Image (cartoon, rainbow over the protein chains, first blue to last red):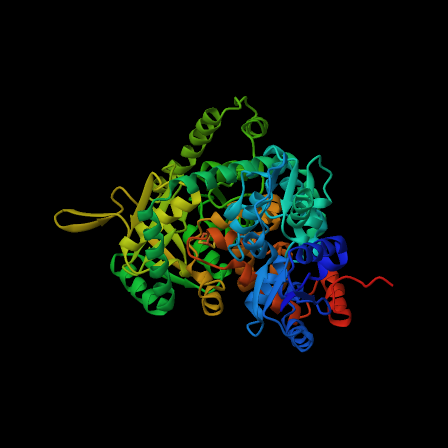
Length: 222
Length: 412
Ligand code: SF4
Ligand code: SF4
């Protein structure tokens, strides 16, 4: 059985994104259960609350259901699982899962830039899977000057958005300018923190999660 | 408070853009430059640095013996104050000394403390000199004026010197050289750091402008301040060190100059009698500076491998934007915050931006020594939290996670 873990930010800040993932999973006839009762504790870990993290970890494990594989769309949860929860089954990012499972779809006229989320790219080395998903969805992917290993941080991580929102804001503005310069009409990311932070910027470039592109492409097929 | 300062810095749009552009230029060079041999060299140096830090006590002892036997005077400074006192006693009655750019000299606040004593310290690196004259913050260890445009520099310099300097890099450089040379020729004492030093009793100084050779040759006394973590085993290692540093600091395989110095200048050519201070200085003083480094080496031995190339600064979003707010004087960015923790303590680490780091991993990705700075930031944050030095906004979220199972308040 597959466990879908949306993560708190997706679950509570982007509930429609969670619904999209669930619709996609059903459409692809994936048997899954949803778990969203306890936070993975990523924020605790990044801001120095180690004891609290351990306490949360225990509670998490008590509640976590049995399963064979976890999928999540949140790179923060993903790295926390991979690095701090050895007792959990294999964890995949939704882009890894979809890059294998999605069919090839017809081309659509849309130029997107892909923003590598720090914790997904540099953190876990997942650069190609999201790009492969975009390719399968038939959109044109343009690259920004700073991409992959050199990707510019959106400013949303490490508790900075909470502690110094003005810095966080500036970093996201810079990223949106880079997307515009690359000639993209949509900046696609694969992290709810990036999505949230980049979305706050006023820009003619739209910000979307990878999942939105996938669902639109799947709908388009019919 | 960081908050107010940050607001000010974020408004300096031009400076942010200029800084980002010059940082990115080096990064692109670095990306294009690396050959397989260079990659191998980097790996080798990493091993050498690891080995040196593991055996630091033994190597330091050997270095001291070797410096002494080649005629240097060695002094151990536990902290910046002891180093400064020694330097001031050696400067004696001089009112002006010249210095080579060095993060360690910035760390001990040489210029500032000397000024309080009525001694003027003249920086000789162009970028450093500009930043000093214009009273600006430095941006990057090897590109201190990276955030200033030629136009800005020329107009400010013209103001300060009451003359007219054209806004071109050439004109500015010429002006700075002519002015600085006067001081170098006059100074009795030249002060430098060292990029690295070997247990064989040799310091290395890496530069592109040629000034450091002059600072360490022309005045009759040379004082070198060595951060004890910059030790390697052999002279050959200091050269590898220089090459890797140049690659990661400038995107170039080597700088124009790599000086290796093991002692004062002397000749034995006249009746086999040793005469000191022939063309170079007659005295060389070597200061081994601890200033928290022994503690750092114990707690984060991996961080002690740092070669100070500054590549981590070039890629760091916080350093690109928040600039001087993020790091310690002389040591920019996350490693500067770690240094300040060991030099001055936890509160200082926080006020220097411990919580400005987005944990984006850009620095650890590029670092030639494989130092995981975000991990170190998290460790220091952990100590801050357990010492009750917390950020209010974080506290609120932590409470929510523990009480409600999520960082966001549940909708009622
Ligand atoms: S931490 Fe790494 S990248 Fe930064 S200065 Fe040190 S060696 Fe260079
Ligand atoms: S992890 Fe922190 S210190 Fe390193 S580059 Fe990112 S913001 Fe800068």
